[in-house]
Length: 469
Image (cartoon, rainbow, N blue to C red; front, side):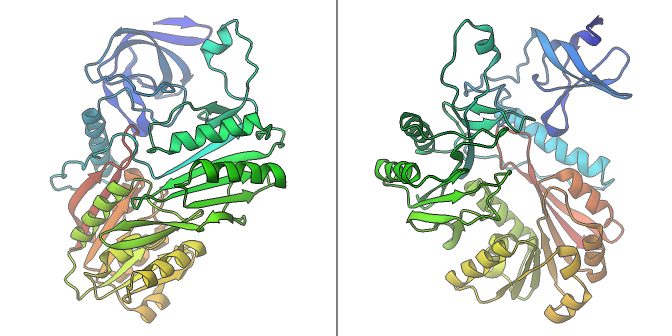
C-alpha cells in the first residue's frame, strides 16, 4: 500500500466479485471492501482510491498486472467515457451469472427469504441493437476526452449530439456510433447533427440556457415504424421547418415526425405540447396479435423482444384458468393487463399517470379487449378498501412497481386483501426483496425468474411468484 496525494494505492488487488450498480469488488489489506468501476472479476490490479469510508473504499484501477478470462473486447469506441454500457468489457455469459447472483443475494440477504431453486436467467438473443427508444442531447460545447485535452490539436467544432457524461448534467459526449438501437437510428442522429451544423442551427447550451436544438428522441417498433421527436429550446420557424423538412425527405421511412418547443429549464416533455409535423402522432408495436399505440410520452418497455418473454412468464406464473379477477398494480399503459386478459375473467389496472391510463384504455379498445378496466390515481390512496369493495376482491395480484418498489401502505393493503397468488415483477431486486420481507409471514416464494432486459449493463428484471400460506 502507498499513499499518493492523500489518496491510497493498493497494489496487486484481486477483483473477486461484481456488486451492486455494476461495481466490482476487491479487498484492501485490512479486510475492507474496495469498490471499483473499471475492472472485471478475475483482474489483478493496482487501485487508487478516491473515497474512504468506515467499512469500504471506492477507487479505480490504475495498473493491470493480469487480465481476467471473463474479459472481452468492447465493441464501442465510446466505452469507458459514455456511461451507457458499463459491462461491455465483460463476456455476456458472465454478465448473466452476476445478474442472477445479485438477484439471489438480494432476496436472501435483504429479504431474508427462503427460496426455491432459482430458475436460470433468461438471456437476450440480441446483445446489441435491442433498444426501441433512445434519447440524445445537443450541446454547443462537447465533452473533450483526456486524449483530446492532452493533444496539441485546436478543436474548433465543439458541437455534440449524444449522451450526458455520468454525473455531469451539462456535459455531452458526441456519439459517432451507438450500438443500442438498430439503424436508421445512427444515420438519423448523424444527419441531424450534420445538417444543423451546415445550416447554422444553434445547439443548446444547458448551463447558460440558450440555443435552438435541445434533444432528439428516436423510437422504433416491431412493426417497422419509426418516430422522431426533436425538442427545441428556442423557436425559429424557418430553421425549425428547414431541419424537419430535410429529415422528412432524407428518411421517408419515418412514420411519425414531431417536435416540442420547451423553453423551461429542464428538458422533460411530459408537461409540454408535442406537435405532429408529419405522419401520425404515434407508432404501433405488436405482441401476440395485440397492438400497442405508442406516442412521444408513452412508457413502454425499451427491449420489445425481452418484454414479450417477460410478459409470457408473468402470465404463466399467474396460472390463470379464465375464472380469476386479476389486479394489475402500476399498470402503466396496460401492456401486462391486456396480455393476461384473454386468460382471466376480468383485469383491473391501476396507475398514477393519467396519460398512461388514457393509452391503456385506447389500446384495450383497439384490441377489442372488453374485460379490462383501468383507473388512475396515487396507488397508496386509490388502492384502498373502498376500491376493493367497488371492484371486487382479486384472486391474483400482479404488481410491477418503479425502481423504488411499493409503498408500505400498498404492501399492507395486499396483505389485507390476501389474494391466493401474487406475481411481483421488479426492475430492482433490492426493493423487491425489502417488500417481500414484509409479506413472508403470509406468503411463500414459489418461483423466482430473472430476465435480462438490458445486455451490457448491470440492470436485471426479476419475477417472483408468491402463494398464500
